[in-house]
Amino acid sequence: MSQSVGRALRILIELGEGPRSLDQLAAELGVHKTTVLRLLRTLEDDAFVHRDANHRFHLGARLFALSHAALEQREILGYAAPHLARLNQATGQTVHLGVYEGGEAVYLDKHESRHSIRMYSRVGLPMPLHATAIAKVLLAGLPPAERRAVADRIAYTRYTPNTIGSADELLAELDRVADRGHALDDAEHETFMTCIAAPIREASGRVAAAVSLSVPDVVLSREQVLELLPRLVETARAVSRDCGHTG
Amino acid sequence: MSQSVGRALRILIELGEGPRSLDQLAAELGVHKTTVLRLLRTLEDDAFVHRDANHRFHLGARLFALSHAALEQREILGYAAPHLARLNQATGQTVHLGVYEGGEAVYLDKHESRHSIRMYSRVGLPMPLHATAIAKVLLAGLPPAERRAVADRIAYTRYTPNTIGSADELLAELDRVADRGHALDDAEHETFMTCIAAPIREASGRVAAAVSLSVPDVVLSREQVLELLPRLVETARAVSRDCGHTG
DNA sequence: GAGCCACGTTGCATCATGTGCAACGCGCAT
DNA sequence: ATGCGCGTTGCACATGATGCAACGTGGCTC
Image (cartoon, rainbow over all chains, first blue to last red; front, side):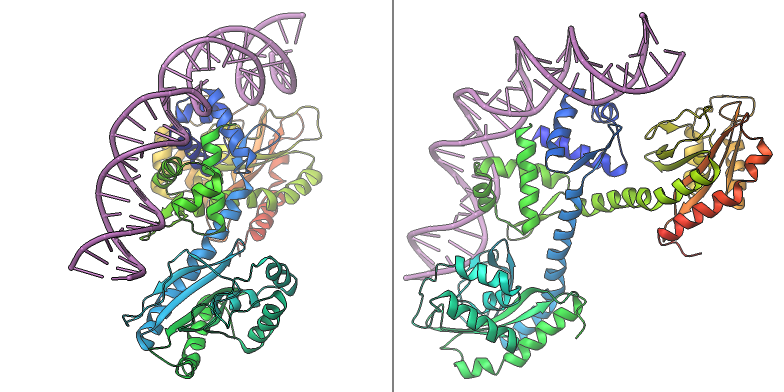
């Protein structure tokens, strides 16, 4: 579709086979040296390729970073999916998987409630950091210094009377969440919703994601939702185990 | 340098942070949706990105493949270098590291002889497959079917009276090399040179590379070179161990 | 169930951008 | 000194990438 990009990608693929010289690449792609050189320089600027002292081109460091990132993302989704489905099956409620990435908490996966009254959300959508159970779990998993930095950047839009309104309040709440091992959203985002969330940890112990149950008041009371906590926590633990987290 | 390629790479980098939608990417790059879509399709064609059922874009499978390939290449170099330096130090002779990639045997690393008469070679340079000790070790490490295919493709240029002249001869020699665990180039490439080579194996047992010693006749006789074999083989074993090969 | 909205998708006209050519510079080998 | 191989640069051309505007479509909301 896009010629130059296609050629650049073919260069990467060729380099995947082993180091190449400029002329080799030009010959293999069937294009002029000049063109290959320009593509290589662009690739080099972003560390996708690396040239050694002898003007031979190798795959660059960025690829390692990317593949690691990709692996992590995929793994969590794949490992979590069956457990989320089972939790959804057992409770009949909306189940979310969320992760903290690039300064935002976003939904990675969603299993719909059986009830006609549902929570609005979309996979990939960022959520308010101070007003959702998932976000609180994710933030509680960050190192304290980073928590503070993130808390200071939040706008603290007040969605309901219960919404957390300041960085100090949020940080105090994050401490409680870290202690308890789960978070509650008690009508802090929507007046008619209660959510509970628990952390998923990867092998290193880092909080890699969070699972949540979201239930409208008209379906279950706050107390009834809390009764689902053990099930939720057990699901999060099961996913963590699948991710290699022992304990 | 190359605009569209640069944008495509930035897309990959963004996707390294996490899955994105078309509009998100367009906003982050500051370009029109259409443009991003085209770049994405090109990336998708080569499996650099993957789009899930919900039209969200992820990093694709090719990146895993590439990073594995790159890691392998780099690892061998890094693991081997100190051992090669030590062998070079101990013997004073030219030491080469070679790998078989994309139908060619090439030099990956070189440690120069202390003597004024040296072997001509350059890192990254392909070597004749039928007339060097390294290449014979590398080919001997291939599965038999592939050996045959490679042997049939060779031109069998006769460099010296000792040069192997046919596929059958070469295959017979490869069998011997595989049995012995090392190869000898007895003036088969240059009339005045003797080389010996031994395989480096990675964890899976596959022959990942080969080390060689190259000595001009005027420096050491054929017999004297063969006396260096134990040292060479031990070096190759040491590198193999560093690569995770047990045994 | 109907309408709406968000998002991905397509065709097209424009011109910026990527392209190939030819010439240069450099290092290495003879 | 000379020649060769390889990477590099400047330049003119037109190809191919771009943005616009309009269309499809699926999912959410009412």
